[in-house]
Length: 241
Image (tube, rainbow, N blue to C red; front, side, top):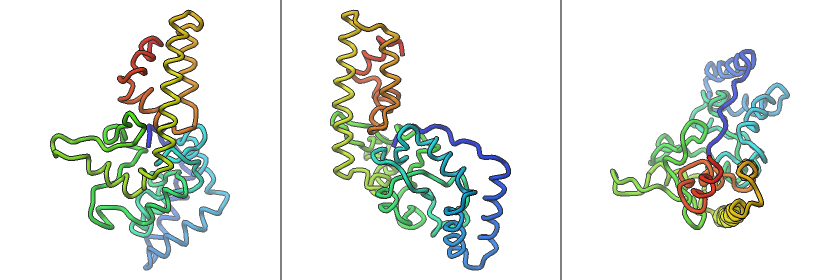
């Protein structure tokens, strides 16, 4: 997970079309069946394209999964699953752009409504770094809650439901962190020796932020709480960030 761009506003005409589809679901006695049927037909229709275009824009360069950041996205996910929340099946604010692995892992689960557990974290309207941190090895880890004397329960259930601790993700985060640290140290040395300017350094940092390989790691260490850790604290200080 990472900081995402703000959810774009869709046209009033398009939102009315979504609302009309939602009204059809609400009037149907079999709301669950209607939600599945109406969403499936809409997803295949050309008129639905503004949804996928807007979600791709939110996801940023490389269209990485809004949940794991490790895979290219290809699926519209209902944050509140349509099987449990049929009236949310055509609601713009309920759509995410995620990869097939995260989508399959989550399925129709949505605690506390479908099972015991805390509410999942929605990266489109919450600061994910209030719940997680990236440790020195690149692992996405639950924050400790002193008030509970335990790890953050919402972070824990989100990692569990989406399988955010799967080996391939942890390994790729580790590799991105190692690479980012090396680049940061090299850039600091180049600046100190006069071979690049502070403006050059800022331009490099901007490029790193746009690279799609595990952008959650970059977001945490160049934009989030990890910016206070070395070598990133010195890097950003020298860049005047």
